[in-house]
Each structure stands twice: as structure tokens, then as C-alpha cells.
Image (cartoon, rainbow, N blue to C red; front, side, top):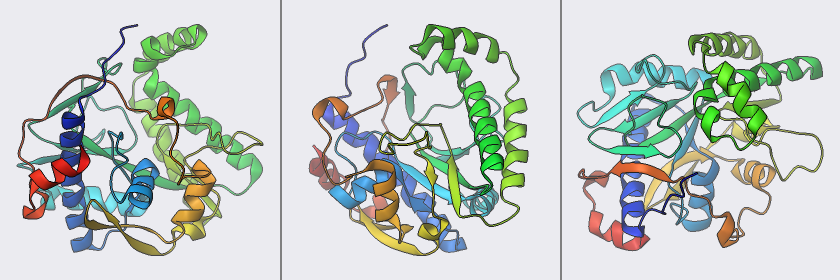
Length: 299
């Protein structure tokens, strides 16, 4: 398998600033229409530990509860600056295969290695993950988890058929990639509707299933939160000199998902997605601030 070179520091920083510009547009829309969102995953760690991006991080994640997400998608039909941005989901882009959305910057390109088989728009983006309730009943929870994983794996099959390190899984994906994407997407729509019928003690982010290495027992999902109470109150946090939203229980959530999140990981675990090709030749606004100052800060 071809070994990809790391993106030069200057290009990585430009990528981050384009993502920040996209986040500012999302924040503008959400504040105007009182839509709740929060910074999550590595983006939230970056805000807490670095006051901005983790220096080697190449993506930006936000999450929304299902109702807020659906409202956001609807509002973007009239509110989004479509000269510069595109809200991508499986309804707005026929080639898009995921159950969450991306907001992309038009005029850019950023194609991750291994994802060449997905022919959707591939500009610089931020991920907008959807959060659904997880059933409290152990049997229902197991059913929910198995169906969810199966759907996600089916959608990922076009990538997994060449990129999964396991030979038998590649063979499995060879068959799954022929399943029409609307089959798992429709199943997940119904699954979300079933799971969200009543309030539960835990919820999960509809993204890619990942095992949580910090939980010694069982096989919980790193994208699952065991306490919905952590999300009940919003909280503003600084990120790259701007104020964005997260939730008041962020410390507990980060500790659950990442352990000692304030400790820097060793060099060999500082993961960055290799890019097959990219073009970052667009202007960045950052609400009129000095972009050169931001560039110099990150390099």
C-alpha cells in the first residue's frame, strides 16, 4: 500500500483555518435560529487543552441532537451562504454515503487517501454528527447497537473493500458494497425514530463505530455517552480566539471517552488522515480578522 506523505505544516494550518471559517458560518446560523450544537471529540480536546486546534489535527467535529440537526438542515436551505459553502448530506448529494452531514467550502478540494471510490463532492469540510437516544433496556440496546454497526459497515464497504487490513473483512465488504446505500440509510432513519421515542439515560453519536480503549470491560462505543444529563446545559468555550458552544458536562464526557485527555499522546499516536490530493486556494475571512496572524500562530 502506498505510503502517503504528511501535509506540510503551512498547508495543514491553512486547512484548519478554512475549517474554522466553515465553523463560524455554522455558529452564525445556529445563534441566529437558536439551534443547539457543541464542539466534540478532538475539536473539544483542542479547545480545552490548546485553546484551538490540536496542532496536528486535520478535522473539525460538531454534534447536534436529532431534532436540532433536522432543524439546522432545514434552515440552511435559505440561510446558508451558498456562494461559499455547501451543506452535504445524502439528500443534497446523491453520491454521499454517510448518515451525518458535512459543511464544505466551495472552491477547495480535500480527498483523503482510501476514499477515492466515493464520488461525492470532496472539498474541505467539518463534520456535523447526529446524536440519538440509546435504549435503556439491555436487549433493546443490543439490538440497536448491532443494527447500527451493520448499517455503518455496509455504508463504509466501498472504502473497506480496499482499505481494511483484515483479508476476511475485505471479502465481506466486497459483497456489501453492492447493497444500495438507501437500504442502510433508510434502516437507520427508522432506527433513530424508534430510539428517540422516549427520553433515555444514554445517547450516541451516529458516526463511525469505534471501540473505546479506555473502558476495561465490555465493548462500548467511544461515540456513546452514558449520561444524557451531561448535555443538558450549553457552555461557551474559546477556540482559536472565538467563542463556540459545547456542553457543561464536557469534562466528564471527555474523561469517559479519552481517559486523561489533558496529556499529550506520544508522537507515534498523533494521528492525521493522509490526503490523496488537496487544493486550499481560497480566501479565508474569519469575521474580518487578520488571517496572517492566525497562520503564524499555528506553525
